[in-house]
Amino acid sequence: MKGYVYAFAGSVDELERIARKHLGDKVWRWTADPAYLKVESGHPSDWKDQGTVFNERGELRWHREEGDYRALLLTEVPVEDQTPLPGEWTAEKQTLFLQDLEEPKVHPQFGVYPTGKSKGRIIAHLYCRDGMPLFLSLRKFEEG
Image 1 (tube, one colour):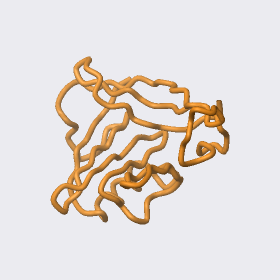
Image 2 (tube, one colour):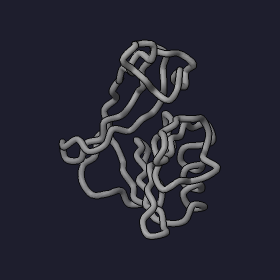
Image 3 (cartoon, one colour):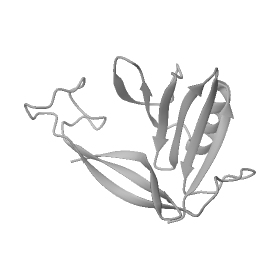
Image 4 (spheres, helix red, strand yellow):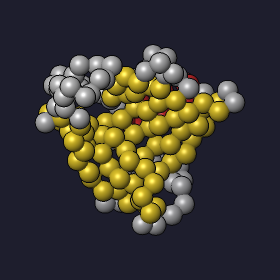
């Protein structure tokens, strides 16, 4: 399928506006913290230095650079009044199997995935530019 990747820069308010406009309110998020990585539902109340919000409509990923935020929006829907990054973008649906959290060798900082289960899958889209894989965009969790 056709994919689109857009670049944005701005404040936290601008990131939140873009995320709500293009992804809506029902999203998953992860924010990078030096101590741990946690996946939760909903938009962040504290936009850390790095993170992402995602759902079936797309993904907004960001990082802070010298006080401002830089972000990429990955979607299969063209965004009005925005120019996508150059190249021929495609997105291919992928199913990833998540590690069984009950296995003895696994020691995560959480006991279940966002589905409430210890096993599962995540649907992601593999974004390629001119045939070269560049991004794996998370979309939704499924029970395993």
